[in-house]
Length: 170
Image (cartoon, rainbow, N blue to C red; front, side, top):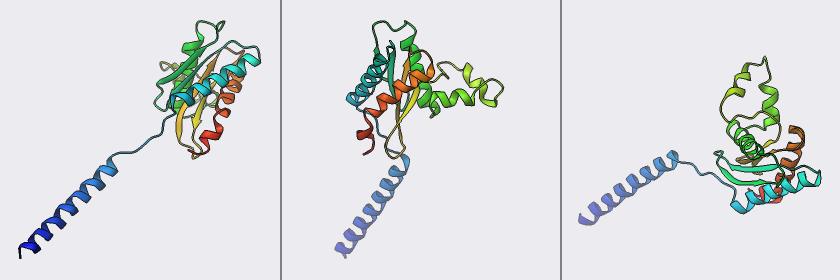
């Protein structure tokens, strides 16, 4: 009888523990983040792309929460470019869209045009999401200082292209 009671007690404990573990599993989730070395590789490649075109820029790479991981500023990039690059990256990751697309969606007269007046929001091309091969948002890169948002975006895309092989496995 004692063995049966111990067995029932053990089953009860295991059952309770399993319920707690399942509940805990439903209460959390796991995210992936770029390693600093990979974020630096994005920034360096974006900066190199702009330099090759003769542009002095700043490049910012942020994590999926919009927190800056890397900031690079070329020696002759304007004083405003680090903040603008960081805010482009922040905008891309927090709105989960590239800033060139957001610029179109928030144009004057559009329903979402008020977004342009929020703090830190920069709706000019050059802020590009960094996504894993499965489409999960990992962060964003922002570039500022080239002549126009389209040129900034080309450099940002070059940064992402530099890590494409790594992202395809994520």
